[in-house]
Length: 241
Image 1: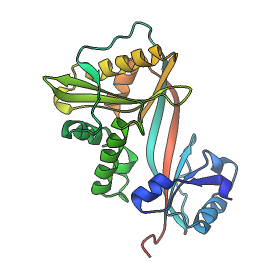
Image 2: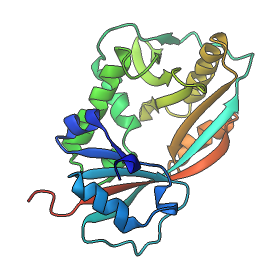
Image 3: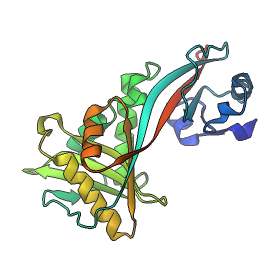
Image 4: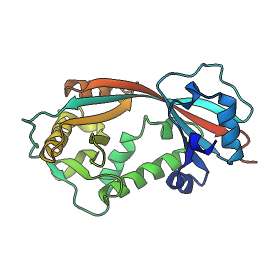
């Protein structure tokens, strides 16, 4: 049924595939075959499926390949009213990202499903996260982009969204040459300050369960686990035929 998924126009146009977002946890109430048959009927090439429970490992189907591509942990914390903005942090004001910011955006996406799923080429992953940071600084995909500079070089950044009841961190990265200096912590604290000044009381973010560095930063910052999400890609078989 069409109500079990939604066609994602932006992703479809970007990847030149028909991409759909499948209703969250729908497989807990409907048979897999019914969902996949509906996707096939709608000529969906790729379906994103997010669930709170991992699917059985023996999920094999003639219509679609079912791949677990991400174990994502969602974290949340109450805002610290004493948060401050480090003097090295400023809001990115240019209308287009420079090469240093693009490099950081690519770093932020290295462990995501768009890089680890072998169906996506390295070229597409780079194109996607370059496009993501371009649309973030333009205000289309983020409300704020904060950068951490050392001697005018951008060595860390965080992008934020405030279009939901609970504002959240979208992308966060620090250049490997500058890790261990508290830059991620400072960027998250600056995000808290901005959200608090806007009247919010909580902040949320998400990272890959296997990304131990990011988890350590979030936990040190005071974030607590809210839930674990399992993200699957349903790829239509014989997609090139």
